[in-house]
Every structure is written in C-alpha cells, then in structure tokens.
Length: 278
Image (cartoon, rainbow, N blue to C red; front, side):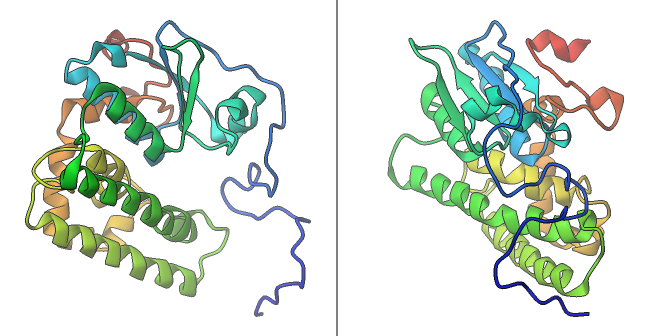
C-alpha cells in the first residue's frame, strides 16, 4: 500500500528501526547529568562513529606530530542509551550530536561542536593540517565542506535504508546507492592525480572523509555494503584508503570511544597515550 502523508505530520508512534528509541522531533535535555572532566585542557565527549573518529584521528595525529598541548581526555557518550540528551552534554552541544569538545585552556571554557568545526578549530589552534591562507587552504575547505554535505546521503540515506530501516525497500536503496557511487566517482577522479584529497599534503579534508568513505571501502561499514557498491572498482580511493588506514595515529584514533567489536580495538575512554598499551 502506498503511504499517504497526512496534511500535518505528528509524532504519534516510534519511527521503527535501529535508534528509534532515541529519535525524537524536539531538542533539549531529557535528564540531568553532569559531564565528567579530566586533567587535560581538551575534553572530548564522543563515540567512535565516523564523525567521532574524525576528531580522535586529528588529536592523535597532532600528538604524533609533536603537539603536546593536544593531549586530551575522551569520554564515551553512548547514543544508544541517550547520553547525548543529558543536560551537561546539551550545554556543550545544543544539537545533541557527537562529537563535542570543550577547550578549558583559557579563562572561560570554549565549546566546539560539529565535527568539521572541531577539525578547523584544532587545526588553527595548533597550526597543523590546514594551510594558513591562499588557494591551498581554500581547497582543503572545499573538500571539508563537501564531506559535511555529502556524508548524510551515505549514512542517513544509504546506510539507514540498507541496514537500519525496519524493512528494505527498493526505491530508497537504489536512490541512495546511485548517489553514493557518484560520490565515490568524484573522489576517485580527484585522487587519480594527487596522493591526498586536497593535494600533496595530508590534511583535515582526509581526516573528515576517510572515516566515512575509506572505512566503507575497506569493508568496515554497513555489512557487505562495500561489495554491494563495488568499492573495489574505485582504485584510487582504495589506494588512498589503505594508505591512511596504515597510519599509526589513525589506528589509535579508530580505537578511542569504541566499546564494541574486537577487544583489541576497544578503548571506551582515553586519558593518556599509555591507555593504548593496556
């Protein structure tokens, strides 16, 4: 039966599927809960989803490059349990989405939310992985914003209907699969002539795009989606994805705020580099 939308939509039943219990059409906190605070000036509240991995990879890359001021505490926010709707988290991110960062290095704490904003903030704070000016900086920003606009079609579109929706329907799966393959073609053409997304240098553009498109290409997202989408056919994307995957900081960044999967890849909380050795 074809669905007939009502004249005015009302929230009168769960949406169904994974995460239905935490989806709602209103903002704001649902319960009182203070956020924990560790010893470092940078306090990260997150989960190892692609958006969360962007930031932990950036922080680990900064530490790998010798920026000692990038030491951080990473606290697990379990979105399946609704931690993102606690009053403390909503104060840091009124949009109730991970990741959220609190910089306590100044007189007053600075909140930074939205993964792209966090990457730019950290890049400018430490003077790394983002050119200071000129066309090179613009090119990095082009691709950072490309990711912010494109990934919802991959995750909320294709990923949702291919894996998480309560029923599988041909139209939305085909619609979003077509768009995701177009996006992979965009990336493949870009990477055919340069080692990294924005040119010769590794940047926050790579850190933003890889957790979504690199991880899926390597078979780590949405079940067998890499086979369904034939990501192996995008040779330049695969070369790039494998090269970034081999970076030590990326390996560490993938572990932080992860509490599922193989035991050796789990580090639900991170408070020092020594935590990786436990």
